[in-house]
Length: 493
Image (cartoon, rainbow, N blue to C red; front, side, top):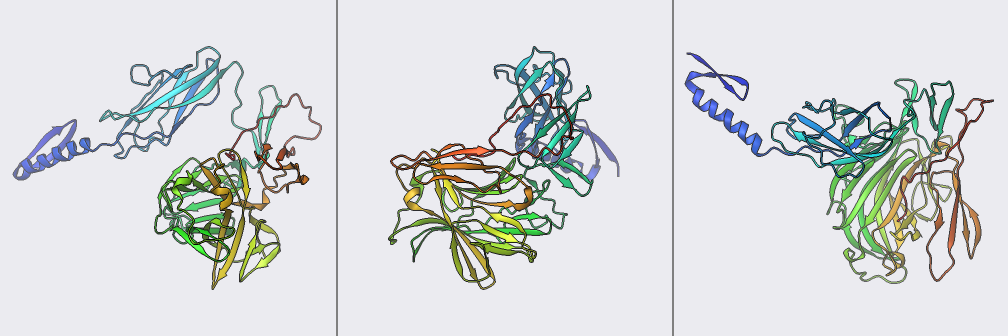
């Protein structure tokens, strides 16, 4: 029986004579089928650091994928007016590819010979086989006359120290952790708050779909937020987990169910430090989790008042409430209103603590709050209930605020978890026109500035203070200069 060798688009195939006709047909059908259903590449962003003039600049793609794993070209253009469209004809990249899956080598390098100033890099990925293109992603960067700071020569939990060529040092001090101690390398390394796919070969991650694993605390997510331990927050051997159950209206004695999480689970997605469950409970309601260096923020976002049903059969003071099952590690005890909680039902407007056997607080859930898009802030309360061996937490916000015609949607109901041992020492002062001054506890990174926007009643005015850990600066050092940079990680409204 003879063998035949047939070249198909540069690939050599060996076919048996007797079945060659049918096998060859199958090869062509498979090839053209893959072309017909090829998906475009996906690109979520690009990284473009500050660069010294006439030095090598490298643009790095973020979230670069292609469903079939086809080789991808990476094209970039640079302008000051964001008008350029990256293509093979105007790409500034010295090596545009193609790059093979998983595209870890993909990048765009060029000499930053332009004049000093701010530039916009615009990049896209192009499938080298089908020509399918990703969306264009852009990022601004500076071309400067000075040498930008490179990798730190020293790190602490709250600082990055850079060793300058002239022998001086530049210390970047932060009010919240930017590094964590990695036992595997016995050194401080940067916190990476990116939500990534879980490693199914890992005993810790195998039951989850996505994780944040590079920080002082780790978070594990299932794509079904209504399942047991769907969101797990862990630091060391201690953990606390949540399972979304239902959204409802309620008065003092009755409940009006809006929807259960299992009845409308929504769709799971992830981007940067955010895990989101879109259209859960109702279309237009999202439940999202934002990883922070000091904890995990849970946000129930209601897009507009019109999606909520009318109140029915309720009287007196009413609330909208999110009910969840909460579990926590053996060895932790829950404290509500500064007292141990083990049974029954209790309500609090304060924080909820989780303490170890020595009485040291490990985690806490801050006070319940909500805000709208016009920066109106509303306090809420938690109801903690033990039924058999299961514990439930319900976050309550008054409907008199939620359904008020003055509300500016979307509005957000916040339930968070904070890690207690971050040594953050920031806080804020509140001046209320009716109550006078108050000073916030300095146990978390929430800072407030401005006012609560109240009209027709006493206003509150907020002023914050910042405290920095300067232990990374040696005693006796001469301070050449200082600067302060503030940025918004999240905000109300």
